[in-house]
Image (cartoon, rainbow, N blue to C red):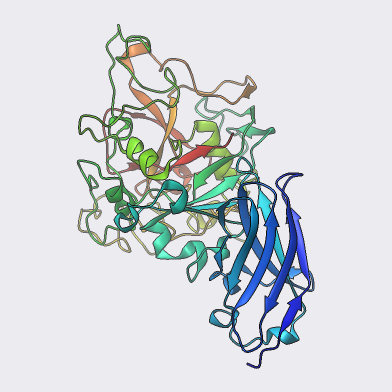
Length: 449
């Protein structure tokens, strides 16, 4: 296409009063395909960019090849962003399009919606900050298909921000939606911080990069890379578990939520504490979600117990609850795919039985996949039934049910071998934290300051 020396109108945006983006200028020089966006930044911040025409974004997929001082933590000063529009937007003549650049600065404690962290071994020489990038939308990630790209299930970890700060919601459910079991009786919960949660359950390939002594503990071995890791216990994840009645946080015999908060055993003895390795690679305090965080993310701002916001017993647009649920969850009743335990041997392909590849079903309203079915997901909390008491930032009960004789933790979401009514948003079970099974995996969470 013929190119002219152009200066485009540019828009400036910043998430807070500080940091501030200013002096935004977008240019495309004569005879060049390269578009350069210059800007100045008042202080160190996360910077993202969007390109608008008539005030509307052209879509992240059209500029996911941008480079330079963008989609990462950027130091203050005069900075530049580079874009090759012809690589993803080949049939558009920029000189004929009224296009503007919107550069946004985000304080590091109020980051954009998506965080992407590269974890493969080829980048082991990079710092945690160099491995980490940020995006406003799922399609802006630097791959074809954005967040749906297989790299997000293997060589990268991708996270969605949940807007939970100072939000009160109903945790659990009621007899109209499901039943009135004390396991999930409804009560009000207020969360005080936003948090990132994994868009996908942690896969077997991602778990291999964590460098544990058992790289693949999972039962399902056929076409394994993008299937969720399972057969991991709390001990495997945290590196320590001791139920001696004399153990206390002070004598260090038990490092187990919630007595020691988010503490885990440092990897100094070759133990398989995968979360320690996650933190070492990412430089961030990732952990399991609390029971409340998990359900907040699963609901994605909706009611009901199905991700579309409806009740299990409702008939909506001629579809039963079962018919709607199996669009979102891998379970025993998932349409033509039988995943009954009798056929789910280790070598069963993921499209025929057992676990599915993560992201095989529809996401919830926040673009988070497999919050129902596929595998149960560990939460931080000890197991106990709910009460009707309103709570703020509940970490779970101070002790497990039945005292030191119980090793049970909360597991959420149901699994591939459960019925469709056991993979609902509210469904929770008690699972023995000392052992792993082929129906329990995990999802990572990071509470923001």
